Amino acid sequence: MMLLYRLFGKLAGVPLVFRCVAGGGLITAVEFATGLIVNIGMGWRVWDYSAVPGNLFGQVCPLYTALWMALCLPVSRLAALLRKRLEP
Image (tube, rainbow, N blue to C red):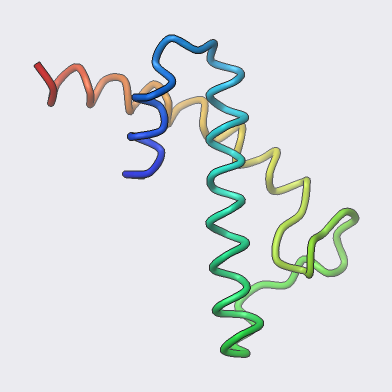
């Protein structure tokens, strides 16, 4: 959430759709890095998207990237409200 808060702060003047794409990309990148460490490196096999079309090493896939982008809609609004409340 903190990464998205900072990202959305930097993209405050950018249209919402682009903020959602950037947020979805950020979440997917973190999910991919975590998957490489936890699932592949440590062998824990917490999740596996190998059966989903377009997956990358079974760690991320376009379907969940799209869902992350959709989740960024309310998160972007929440970040704006928090920023208004916390920052002068």
